[in-house]
Length: 182
Image 1 (spheres, one colour):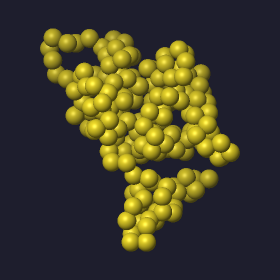
Image 2 (tube, rainbow, N blue to C red):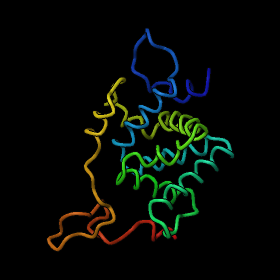
Image 3 (cartoon, one colour):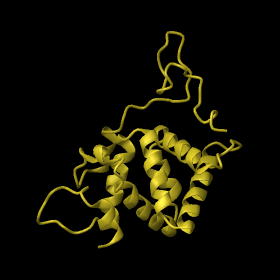
Image 4 (cartoon, one colour):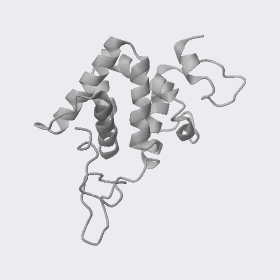
């Protein structure tokens, strides 16, 4: 039994005729779907667990690519050194700028291989299993965009009327959860 088989056992549609393991493209399709469906907190937890499952070199490369991607988005900004905080920042950035994670991680052939391994591990996470229920193999990329959660600027302060930008901070629109970690 291969790694992907073990990771994805029970995650595939119950079809007796199709018992083969997921291909890299199938794992990436599910991963892309999850990026739009799962909350950033759950995504960062699943990616953290997936990074733990990867070897030291792939883990270091993924973290370096995320740091480079985040710093390219906001030159001069301090990029977190702590992997957990870095993953939360990357998940929030993915929510604000869909496609960020894939662009940051798959810039070249080596990165695409690393992303495929990471995606397969993330998709196999028990934490994300409930969010895969609506996935249908063969979904067009355009269909995935329509199913994304509503865009919320988690860093925007609330307006004078209390609307907008609260982003799950419990009404404290000017609070950034990264500040508490530093």
